[in-house]
Image (cartoon, one colour):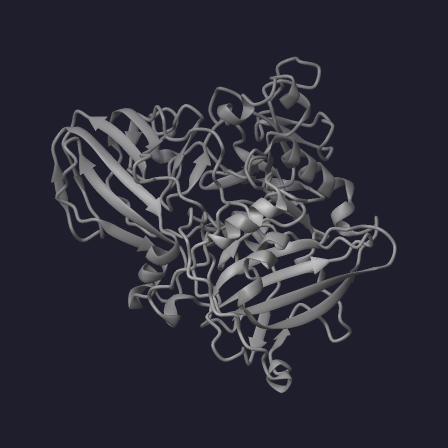
Length: 539
């Protein structure tokens, strides 16, 4: 699928002006286990064209090899790296890269039979220090768009039909250093081939096959219900893959709608991208079973909305004895906020998501999926009448199309807003929920009263700005050990994900070894000054 709208000649002209700049920080900046958010390439300046490499000695080229633990001895892909599993990207190991290699690029391709290659994986700016990628090493390097849509992520094989589908992994050793910058924010497989054409020192390939028919797990009705609900409603990249037990809902956990506006009490956390991808995606049971004894839902996540944003119960962290987040004024106009891991999530009906469709649409289409596999619907039953909510968990046993029979949840304006307990047996994510989040900052303050909280982007420097006004003095911290006294007034928390050289410089520091994603944070008063230092946090 060609995503750019300009001509190929025009594209090549742009490519000739692409900037190729050196990576700061040295070889220790990238680890195999990295899970970084893809960076948005910046507009380039005119580069110095790399010297066309001499033809490598055939004996040397032959030693450049590529292998994968997810490719069996008989040459078959493991189902877990397809859409019949979690959809995790496969592990790769390479050896004996050509002398002079300054970066790597990766393409995974398949020929559907019409002679036009499709790409499942487009990845470049891979550090020369790397010797492989671990399984589900999400967003290491810079991701381009595969052929199955603009999502900047690994796109697991999902083709159906007779015969064995064949896939080829090609790793390119390049004379170009990282970061390799492009003139467009979306780079396809064909674009990447053109971009790096004059800098290829060598390449290693690995071929694998996978048989997938209409009987595959990922084609089941239950899987399709989850996949269809998300494809119809998500306005941000969200993917669904299924094994025999679960649908894996993958996302960065950020919605397309506005966030953090209208909060009147805050702990000064901010919404940042999360790694809910592949095997770390949210597991939704495909064949839900009613529990003998309903399971309490008093803390943490209870489900995932169709836009890939987690849904929490209404209570503050630690349980309902600490209060209702909505009643306390900690939620924005969309009924969400940023939590202790700087993660965005809902605590009540996701009203801004629901505003993208008619009210009647949500009577028959899920707003989200509870962790026990049952659907979460709108305020009404399919007939338009206000949904009955039982006294057990806040749902009812009426069958709703596009979701498993037996039970369904419906949102309401009264606490607990969505569900008070799980009527079905929850997925393991209920117990292991904390492992999905990667906190990087100390909670800055105990929640305090504010007014006029807004989140916007400063177009002058691309920082996101969380601005708030308070009529109370407060004490903040950066590390949990230092403290800063702040008088009543207007303040800004400014934050921005680092990219390119700035990211590599941050990752090169010893304290960030093994980390892959960094943000710059600034705390400012109305005059633009602050007694708190500017800080870079990585995870």
